[in-house]
Length: 184
Image 1: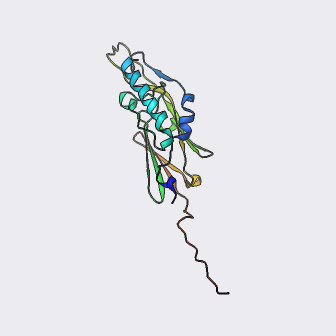
Image 2: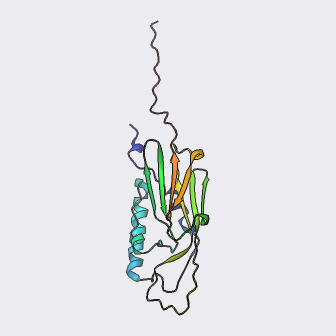
Image 3: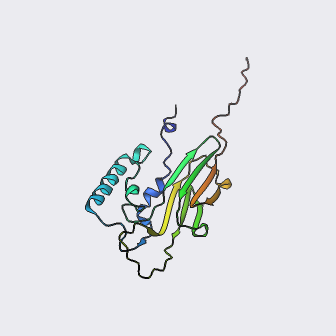
């Protein structure tokens, strides 16, 4: 029995390795404050992520509930990954981003989703009480499973959501070949 089938595929393997390479976010001065309790929460999440990294399914990051910025201060869009027998579906939330500001590339076994959420506003006489909107460059690195067919990848951008469909290669494991038994 192959035990690796029981452990889910770690789509974020490459991203975890390169987490420090994100481009900085440009935010308004009133954006998410650097609260000590939020910093403690992020640090505890980081420790748990490091501890459970080898299990195959990294823990969900609670800091996404606090702000659309990770503990290192980079804009990181939310990703949802689903699969069936024929394909993988990756949905990325990109509110405020236009289709022309998104780049999708396959580099080796990695799907790179990158772009920029631009801050285009002119305000005169505005007095902000609170601003939680983040702007800047983003990048998500998804490690593709071995059965991903990179030649057939398709992407659709609609209503601020990028949906990437990745077809699966036919599994050679499921096919049985009958071998004739001869008498000597």
